[in-house]
Length: 363
Image (cartoon, rainbow, N blue to C red; front, top):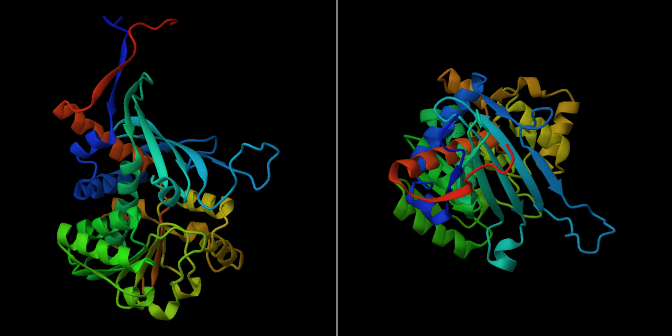
């Protein structure tokens, strides 16, 4: 029996996580790519009775007899996203978050706020509790970069990012980190002043030139890679004739895009089960269009190429024509990047040790 049965865990505030490199996009891109390779080899696990990839989601109903219950709305939800990641990560974790699209304007808060707990897979004991808001934002952007690298590879010299919020920022950072031959990124936001400020800030921070445009059409017209990172009640619209004939389109949320513009062999996904869940449970324009295309017999989930298989095979796979990457987030990404930040904290002694108990009251 061990000398002590006390349980301590390391608490990392957002400020401490920043000190430990949570915003290091080069490292995040590398971690996410490694995590997809583990996923390809069956060395990850996600929660729910059916191994649901996106966890358990609580959404507010349209009508309720409870007068205190918050009202339904776009992007208003709570979610618990558990996962295990093996390899050098070897952690179980869960991201718990609440989301309200009105937070920035009404409360001065992020749209989504996250807490991540990491546990030892063998004993189950918690080892870390950390702010997950930046972890989640970073891994979301990193997946876009990893996907763009695997699909477009060295052919990608120009990119566009629609939406200059937090996810637009991390996606821009990730494209710069992941695409070796990238020369410029065009950005667009409905708030033109915000877009101009964003372009100036990111040009100063990154190796690539970031330029703002006054229309979405201008942003995407010559782009080899297009990332859509705008959130709102209405999905951003991309017309087929705006897009380069070989463009890779990566929507990180909802989008209004004619799927006839995508090559039959050009659909890539982070995980087939994850996309199937989104198609079944969300009423986004893009998921409804995917469901209709599948029902028409043009596409099937089995024909979608998983990002993990490209990474495991160390291959890029540009199709002839336009490509579409559907990557809506997997909890293995949160666990892997949070665990990397936690290990950095251990090495530097950063964070605060919290005692859960000195001795178990009942054992």
